[in-house]
Image (cartoon, rainbow, N blue to C red):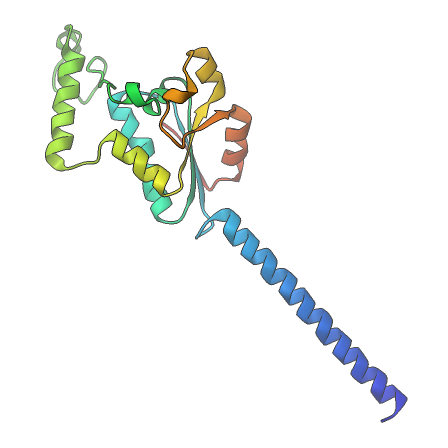
Length: 192
């Protein structure tokens, strides 16, 4: 074999080895990206700001459903939304009858003392009769599916909550900057 032919063969072999090495690098990078972004690569951030009985359901239902589809989901709870993650308070969330356009009574009657309790009982009965999951069950399902339920540290301090009073596996010590960072990377951002 001539020297030129040998050099060409060595060059082809070297190029082939370089290409194989590059393919392996790219495959490793793709595997890392798939792991970081979840099963289908979608991300969702939900900001939960309200802690009434009826407003606890939307962020938890959306989060657990998105997680079931393989999305990476974060729910950042701030201000009254923090009550959803508080074990004791979440058991006693109320539905507000006043100013609620879906209540079948006028505001004058809704403002009567005890109407919030009655409205909450009515909604709880509908939920029980329908077999809909409770708030606690939705929190458990969300956590089991990998949803990160975050508690705003500023609100914890402001409301003087004890971090031990939150459900197990709730992420505490999270600030607005962390929530914004996840929102910037998310495909879907919701404020509830």
